Length: 236
Image (tube, rainbow, N blue to C red):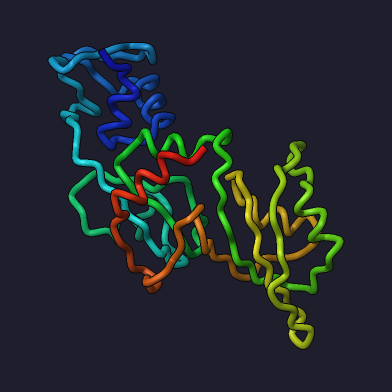
């Protein structure tokens, strides 16, 4: 027996959390009957559908994409804009792990493995994500120290971070900063710099834990190796 939301997640329908939303809003049927109870357990003989489409387990696939700017980080877009899914040549029902803003480029993982996605995006796992930011203004060491210790955004203090000034362009009044965080709040990096009055002009995620953009150009992707997937599962 297996919990329904875990089954949907493992089949690549969506993350565990999104699968729970699909269940509670009546999109899921078990043997032809709508089920809204999140604790519902199923077995191998049950027929599961989402919006009347049969759901079966797929081969797990894992991709690392060098996301370009001005691409929607979603499975589909109501306005018909290009999404990160459009950049991956696969028949599997993949989805992005977490999000990158429309105007942010860099490392993005995509998979149909809901269990791994849930693990990597859960706040308790403290996954390191490193960004390279171009700022309007000259940042100082005092602000860097405060960034690392944590600042209060929307009433909640950010977790400890790592920040390093990579370059100062006094002539053009610009700063280039590397920032590593373990959280994934909405627009967090931009908001952290905005707290001190700096506008982020350009933002790229260069690393997701041990994964980086080596060998990839903007818009390109590769499949993760079995060793890399195992290492992601082992992160704590």
